[in-house]
Length: 82
Image 1 (tube, helix red, strand yellow):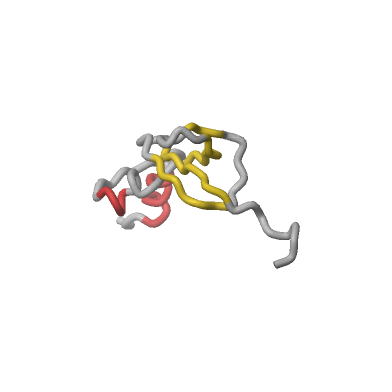
Image 2: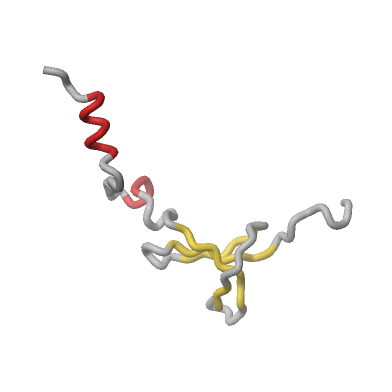
């Protein structure tokens, strides 16, 4: 392999901020945050909004997040016409 062209491949902690679920894996993602893991070592931290612990497909719970009235806008535009 050529030297200096490959990103650093290291262990990283991914943490779901909505459920505090975290897991350790290897990645090349760059982050400035760090966390101390269960083994006492410090690892880079990547904060996630959705993971398998909070995603409706995996949990079986459907959450409707309507941040900008998108559902109402859809119904006004494409809803049944009288």
